[in-house]
Amino acid sequence: MNILVTGGAGFIGSHLVDSLVERGHRVRVLDALVPQVHINGVPTHLNKNAEFIKGDVCDREIVSKALEKIEVVYHQAAEVGVGQSMYEIVRYVRANDLGTAVLLEEMIKRCDQFKKLIVASSMSIYGEGAYKNLVTGKIVYPQIRSDEQLSRHEWELIDEDGTVLQPIGTDEDKPLFPTSVYAVSKQDQEQYCLAIGRAYKIPTVALRYFNVYGTRQALSNPYTGVCAIFSARLLNDQPPIIFEDGNQTRDFVHVSDIVQANLLALESDRADYQAINVGTGRPTSVKQIAEMLADGLDKRIAPQVVGKYREGDIRHCVADITKARELLGYEPKVKLEDGLLELLSWVREQRVEDLVERATKELIVRNLVK
Image (tube, rainbow, N blue to C red; front, top):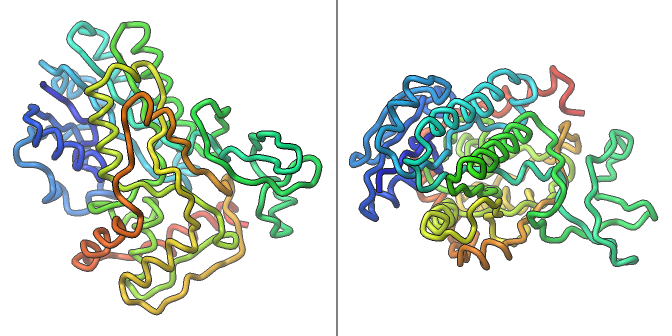
């Protein structure tokens, strides 16, 4: 098939391009090569057997050209970074919202041409994950913790009856409560694509990625995933900076499992017009990740747990992947321990500029760290 991957030079997109090319598809990449991510221009990992167009997804003329003869669109292009999105609002709204709008307007001019649209969504749109009150048995979908609670360093979610809530798997029916501009823009991308897909009968799937890690993540980008950020600190003999107490949990999913879900969504029609979680269902604390990375890099550097909190941060969110299993036949294949070993073997060969402290100061100046 003729396939366009927007953002196809990036971390997830480039792995997806490799797998599509390997399966015999004709792949075109559209990527703006944002300097914050691609500090050296066109990355060496970009598949030589894919056609490459350098261009902005907000540029209607370039998008129209990129869509010529295309049958399937993977929309991966997005500005990524929760903290940065809270002060570079126009940048994130332009790339993620306007960029998706331009892509969709160009697609509906020739909607009979397309067999599938698969958009990268994000777990960030949930806000807090799902919880259970073990005393009452009630499932709870809390909103953001109050400043009053956080200032007392009471990090866990507490129900109305005073019970500390137990985190459980978050399924796709949980009400959405995005807590950052980035998260709102990812919700917009998902909903724009699903709405236009339904209206114009373009089979569309939104994949809600959880915390993705793996090779090719931009280690010098201080707004990328936590594994990359911590690795950059450790490579420069600096401690990973952890907010709150470090016991907040996330669902870390290897990039190859993200690619697996994308391929399954192409091959099956069972998930059309739906949003699907892509994760592992396994909770891991942020402190555990820092310790595992330090051990793997032979660095005797303990994380710096600062006891402060960032505006909009959530406590726990782990995927319920029942829907992905049932509709796509998806099953995570890479254990975290194995995936981190692969990541670290690649990390050791990288030269990394540590910009984390500068990025943190940006948040502090704007009173987004308290």
